[in-house]
Length: 557
Image (cartoon, rainbow, N blue to C red):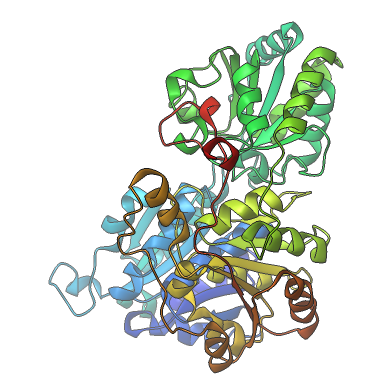
């Protein structure tokens, strides 16, 4: 049958099982939006307040479900406003497809109104991108984009379509998508055997879990693996929940704001088994001293990550879930009683702790955990509140923490929370922000209110850029250059003006009632929690220093 390019776009989205698109219309993409209007009973469109919010919403949709998130924008500034969201998804291996429109083919390269070379702009931050100038190639390009976004190591793909292509006609035949196969072609028997040998010979094993374990949905296989090796487990920020934070073998997060037990345990271990992690600088600190007493095994789907940041002794390349499925039957049950006691002593000696006086970020996070019984989807912005959310909320399963890890995008969380709630209407979704981050995306409260998407926005409000101030306090002689936000902005009034409920919290005893009310309302809620401007995130490792130099407030007193 003959369809216009715009109709082909919609039919291809339906082929891929897309039920929601986040976006913002404009001149060059009007044909696509006109076609979308005719299929509004099949594909829901969420109009965000800004295109960046649409990209982050598609990201949150994808992270929380494992399915591809979709966003749309018009040419020029619409397309460039997606860039930060696309880069965020790229750094954290999130499968999204961004569809943009451009000026007609004849107008390309002439500095036409709202023309931008968006494929050139996004080339370094997409897994692949396309510009479609021939309507006959449109359907196959969109199908290919979805395939690329999902296969192997996932990531964002951009499809830019010229306006004349959206109006032109071509033959269209529906195609049922082939299931995306897990990456197993590089899993070699000799690599598995080498890993098993190292595991059988070790006395002090430690397991380090990254985002790859979350992406591959390897929770069950990872638990079985940890039980058989009987090793303590630490995770990265992106690996949260792949191994339950409620398990007795769990030692906390590793790295710059990791626990002392995890950092000192990895430093003392003789075998570090790294599952789906890429050895980020925020995890390893000084590379030359990282796990210097250990042999290292790295399991990762991306061959480019092997020996990139840390040289390893053995590696297995493949989807984490599939690798663990093959490893588990090959491993005997192990006991390491002396090592167990050593790690247990570290956990008892160095628990996470914070001041019991007054309202603090950690207390708020712990109360959120209690009120939600660990069953919420927690989204964060970037900064102190993000680290507290990683430290004090115990994630019992994966895809429960959505956060910008690689790019560290302030303004990510609220859009992502909207995407996650749309994808998971029966789950509680809470975005935790600092006041600095909230200022960057608070316009999306209007989006949540427009559609009555009942996300809960918790603002941990210290009236400063908290993490930057922490560094200024510790390393810059308390020179607080441009980090004080102590002005008259009232987030409660703002929430009400944008159509949401606003609640202010200034005392510990007010936190639980505020959360109870927010959870019961069934509408967007902003809870403005006022804390001290000099509360800090501890433990901490100075940038570029060995992770064994981890310190906390006790070490400074």
